[in-house]
Length: 632
Image (cartoon, rainbow, N blue to C red; front, side, top):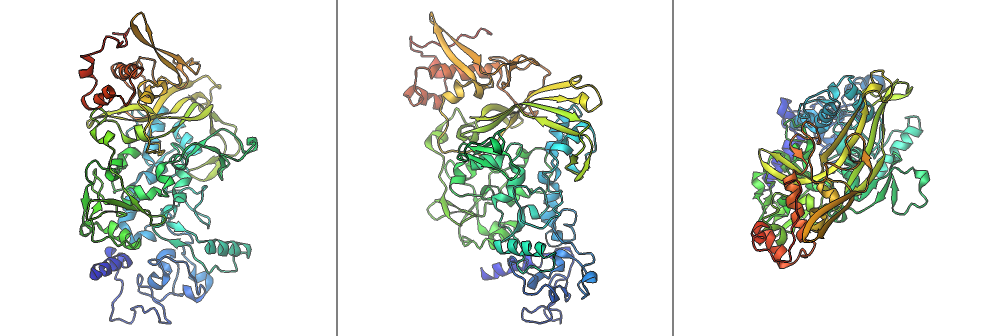
């Protein structure tokens, strides 16, 4: 086993050999010895002059220490010159941006770089695709795009003005740690870590007009923290903020009469506390679930984020027993993570993801079948609980995603208006990082939260019910971009999107919150009541929000009450995701009618979970009154 660990270490340290670079020859004079005064990089095989000036530096990760790989492996430059100007010629001060990654990080990590370049975090394909689709510049949201190749059409300008900051190709040009305001930075986005000492040394370096050289160097390593994800993922579907329990508001910091229960982000957005994800309360990081195989991608190009995610709740919270693989079957990338994390469970089975088989190296199953997860933040051991009896024996809800029932809340956004201001003098292009004139501006009517609505994912794999969110009920003033008068050419869109709330709770939502809740069913907030008069049962709905004049639906609705979107009208950001059909609504509300009298834990309702409702409807009690559907 020691031999295997040694081989893994060599594979990492000498990864440059994969692209034909001869690392070292143990019998040659260039072989590097740690105690030698003439220090030679094992990557370049040459003596480097860098440490003549940058002496006694520290803070490096074990595998990026200049004692092993030199300085030029990452920073390039002229390592044979002693003069400052000559030695710094061709130097990359902040290596790891995708623009230089082939010459820096990619020399030792070519496979990882290839994956990253094809990943959605680099291409933003889905973001571009949906925006162009909604602007009417494409007939489908399923085309491949790359954010750095967009031009200046109305939708592309919209992306440049409001969205194009969050992609890995965005350059990190300033020294310093990754923060809430960080965007992009290539490899740095996830792998750059500043210790407190490194931060202080950087401050002193800047304050001294760059004369007092830092001793503490930031580390480049695999110890990714939630802060690395936060900058980009606290926007759009707001996964990072949801995970920590915070919902965005339209408040300004000055409007807060009390800080209690509120949080002001570095960009001055104000959030209020709702409820955090149960995994966050346990101290789990994003990467405890979303490993390198998902975050960095698998090398394939995907259009939408759900296509690139292979992890499922059932991989850890399995029904009977998890899918596993032995340590000896781990792929190279997983072996390296195992080594860097200094894990010891190489004698145990490791959980493998059902969809694509990639391993979760921070998990294992012991000899008696108990499964555990090792927290990457604190190495705390977490027992992985199998599915509850309700979930495992429930035949009726097999096509319902875990997050549909186990998400405590999700964000809602309505009343969004997009308008182009051709006279904006300080418009900032997020893609080109420069100022110009004329900018798209977005005006929001309301941020709120509720239990997720439900939608149907229907494709070749079948039907699957997932959370949905009103994320794009909006108007776009296209005429304002083409020089027409404000309001002369405005398009309206009522679009719900599939959503992964990341507000998981162990306690599931009750049955009524699905079967007799107007917002859940797609009607929007309001009063949904089951009325029985003269032995006849009917559902009635009174909306909370006013009717939108564009389509005569309540402002926050997805579909009409017991109705459907007219044919030809797009109502989703995905072609395989839709609201409930009339028949499906009737089925759901029939159960809702039963729940008016029968408690969800009653014998009859529990029996319906196993055999379905149909057999029970064939032997109704005389007191049961089922709804009458006027549309039948």
